[in-house]
Image (cartoon, rainbow, N blue to C red; front, side, top):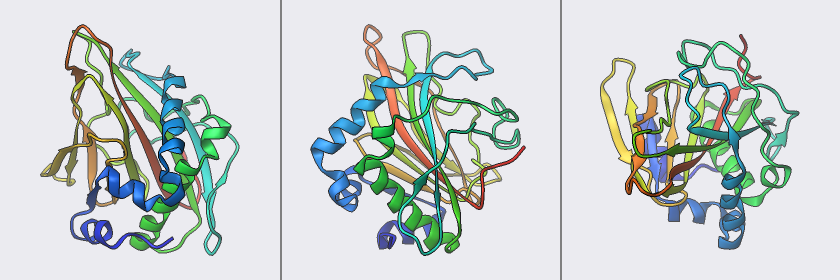
Length: 243
């Protein structure tokens, strides 16, 4: 898939780019149809608690799936469920172990919105790094917060994911304060800070080049439930990360 010229130019210049939700929906073609998106977004209500938080937190829910893409062949093929692994250097809090998460539901993994976003992200990855066999992962995240109990979208801090390309799409912000996306270089210089606010507002990250993180979240109205839903897609050349 051909990468959109505007975001690609921004990626080349800065190592990251922002795409407004309306533009992303248009890029998704049929996958951006409102009815399909409504069903896709509703699946975030069915995530399961992340039981691998070494900080003891119970504020994160998630599901995961992996996909393969081969040079010259369109699309992505879903793989068998496997653990998610990050080296400690990339995730000082939860890295170094195989983490088994609930699978993304079959209908969601085969849905037009997810497949469209996978195609867009692969086009970006290949524009930056050339055609390769790709190992891709899809992560559905919900970060919950309550009065006196903030949520931490990136409890490991500002970090590299240890992959080649990352696409982070906002799904919903509900009664939320905070949650600013932060981009830094390896020296810790702040390159960007912004809020993904509307559905499908997207951050694109050239992971070897820049680090990313998200500030803590809290309820805007302490008397009401609060959550931040995002989709994170990653691409890594070759196979999955290894211990």
